[in-house]
Length: 153
Image 1 (spheres, rainbow, N blue to C red):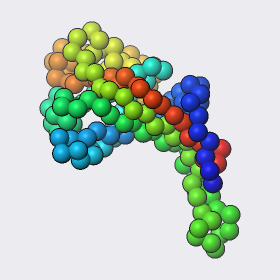
Image 2 (cartoon, rainbow, N blue to C red; image 1 turned 180 degrees about the vertical axis):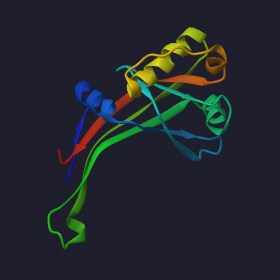
Image 3 (cartoon, rainbow, N blue to C red; image 1 turned 30 degrees about the horizontal axis):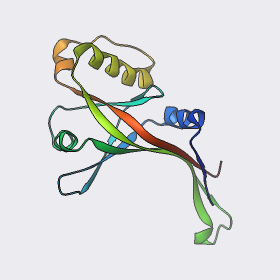
């Protein structure tokens, strides 16, 4: 079943809003792909992420800030003929994007981003203590291109 590709911002936003995880793809110094799941925030313009301040992903992103993102939701198995394996497929909605990571170091901006992420999952804003904010890496993805795909919907 062929899917519908779209660059319609409304469709893209609806799909991203339904997702609870995004997958961030990056490429290390040997050009080896490295993909990790993330909780995220999204404001219709940027994808916001946070993580530990040290580690493989931080090392990679500091060397090469070009990334890909993938989101996927509404997975439903279907079939045309129950006894024919090749008639099975999966309905889904997805978004893929590419862009560049920008690290955020300003304390107040980090708090804003952390609240965007928490707002997505809890519907609330929080207060943070300084050690928590200072000990977390916060970054946003400037999106260069983004498309949605819907299969079976």
